[in-house]
Image (cartoon, rainbow, N blue to C red; front, side, top):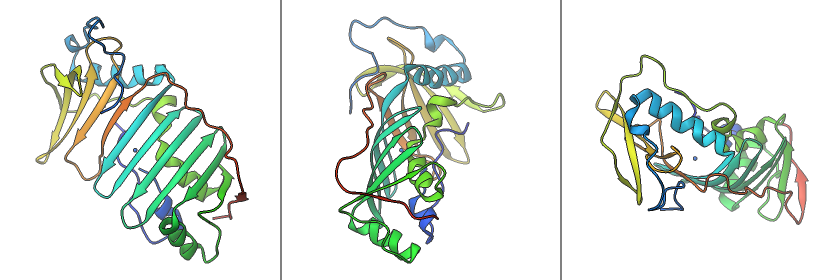
Length: 235
């Protein structure tokens, strides 16, 4: 289990300041959608199937929130578009298309990055461009968690997870898979009608976030931004 754990903790360096961990349209689950039988599988099989089904969709819309951090992103294995907000650090817009990455911070985030870098490399008036070979830009893009599509997560065989009863989650029928350790828990929900998409994660753990996935197979629409663009500094 790796892809949905939270990202690196923030620190005072420019790279870790940029480091990522990430009610909406339904997961192909309308009143007419047919039951898919996913709830008959084991807890591990349900989890693995949900993650694999999301990857097979090719793209989705993900909203993430944990204490002090939230993101709203559309992503595929090669594209990502959206915003990330970090409490007391600010926010930034992110676009990724292939190896190209563009970021545009708000004033607070730009100030923090520039202070750590010792130069005025980021501006609220310009997009900063780099590629995945640039460590700083790669850190910013890591918030997209595109590995969910290229290498969907699976539970370890020894994971102590349990299967709950199907329930309505954000208007959709879903079956929960629950992992409880040391008094904390994380629950993953997989749709029981239509395709068995993973649609939601609820967590009480500090190292894992709450998130929802939706709009499976929709267009991400990543493209180079218009307006002024500057190249990212080496980091």
